[in-house]
Length: 114
Length: 116
Image (cartoon, chains in turn yellow, blue):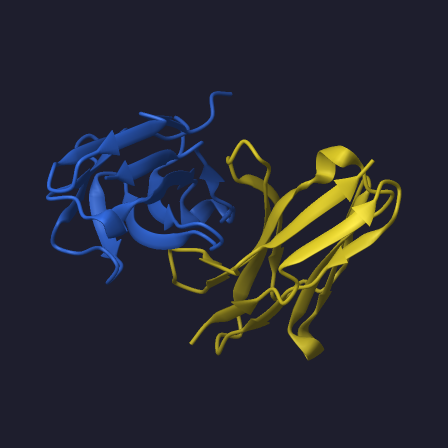
C-alpha cells in the first residue's frame, strides 16, 4: 500500500532563512513518481516538480532544491532564502506505476515571517 | 495557455439538494481527474477519465456521486441528495496521456461546497 508522510504540520521561519520540508513515502512498486505541489492561500494547487524513481539526481530550480534518496524513501524540499511569498501549504505526492491518481500527504503549512 | 477552470467557485446548498460542478481541462490534455479536499488534508482521488471514458473510480465515490465527460473535453461532477459530510473543496486536474511521459497533473482553482 502506498503512503506519504509529511511529519511537519506547520513550520514558521523568518524571511531569508532556509527551510527544509520533509517527505517520506512508502510503496511496493519499483517504478513510481514523486511530486511536490504548493497551495497558496488562494487555494489553487501549483505543480512544482516531478521525480521518477529511477532518477535520483537532485534538482535545483532557483531558490528551490529537492533531495531524493531512495535508500531512506525520502524526497525533501528545501527553500533557500525564504520569502513571504513562499508562505503556503506544500504537499508531497506519490503516483505508482499504472496508477492514475496522485496520493497526497497531509501537507506542511509554511509561514514566512517578514 | 489557459489553465484548468472550474465553475462555480463556491456553492452553498441545503442538505438533500443536488449540485453539479463543471471542469474545463487544459485543451490538449486527454486525462481528467476529480479530487476532494477537506480542511487540513491533502486532496483525495475520486475518479479519472481518459478522453470520454471513465476508467477508475475511488471507493470514496458513493452512489450519490456521478461524473461525466461526454465529449472528452469538459467534465461534470454531480452530487445527489447532498449531506453535510460532502462539504469540501472539489478539485479538478488534467494531464497529458501516459505516452507523453509527463505525469504531472495541473489543478484548477476548485469548487468549495458548503452543505447546510
